[in-house]
Image (cartoon, rainbow, N blue to C red; front, top):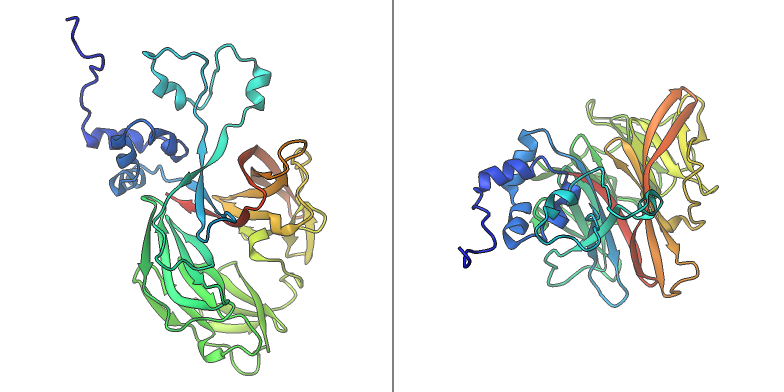
Length: 391
C-alpha cells in the first residue's frame, strides 16, 4: 500500500455539499472559494442560495464599491471573515474545520494578541464590466440584487438600468426607464424602486418612475397637484411606508392611498445626504456635524445623540468620508482614516457594526458588536457606495 494516494477523501455529492454549505455563514464563502475550483463553483451556484432560503439561513452581507485613480471602472468588495492563522500548521490536520470555528482558539497566541487581530476584512471580487463604462453609478439594494443607474462623464444620466446578482456576482441588464431622469434620487419602498427627478422646475408629468422587480416593469407615479408643487426638489426619503420629497416644499406620497400631501413638522427640517443616513425600525439615524451618530425623535421633533458609543473611534470631520447603512436592523458605519505614522500614500477603511436598543421614548443606545480596519487602499482611491444585501 506504499503507492496508495495521499488523498483518500471520497467524492461527496453536490446535494450533500449544498446542504452543508447552506448552514455556513456567507462571511466564510470567500475563504471557502480558495479550497478548490469545485468549491468556488458551488459557492456561486443559485442552487446553494435556494437551499439557504429553504433552511431559513439567509443573512445580510455588506458590499463596498471603490474607484482607483488609475482605473475608469469601479471595484467591488464584500465583507468576509479572516481565516484562522495557526503557526506551522500540520498539513494533515483538519484546517478546514478550524477556519470556520466562530470561537477561534489560536495556539501559542495570548488572548491579548488575539483581541488585536482583525476578524473582518473586505475582499475583492470581479464582475464583468460594460464595454462603455459610466463615470459613476447610482446604486440601491433590494434582496440579493444591487440595482445601478449609470451616469456618464458629461453628467448625463442614462435610462438604462442594471443589477448585480450578489449570489453569483454577475451583472445583468434590467428593462430601461421610459426616459433619462435629471439629477435623480433613488429609494426603495415596499420592494419597488422609486426614481425621483431632482432639479429646479422639474417636469411633474414625469416626476417619478417606479420599477417593480417582480414584474420587471416601469410605471409612472401620479404627480402631486399643482397647488402643492414646489419649484425644486433636492432630496427624498422613505420613512414609515411613505415617500418624502424635500425642496422648497416638503411633500409625502402614500402608495397605499395613491395620494400626495404636504408634510407637517413631524419630519426634520434639515436633511443630510442619503449616504450618511439610514432608517432602522422607523427611526432616522445620521452622521452629525459633531462627528457623532444622531437619531431623530419624531415626538420631540429634534435630533438626539445615539448613546453608548464611547468606544467608537472618532469619525472624520469630512462627512464625505463616512457611510451608514441599515444592516439587518443594525447600523453598519464605514469610514476612511489616514494611516498615522505609516505610509502617507495609503489610507485605512474602518467598519463597525452597531446593535440598537431603545430604552424609552427619549433614549436609544448603541452597542458596538465589532469595529475593525477592513481594508487598506491607496490614498487616491475614492470611496463610493456602501450597501447591505440579503442572500
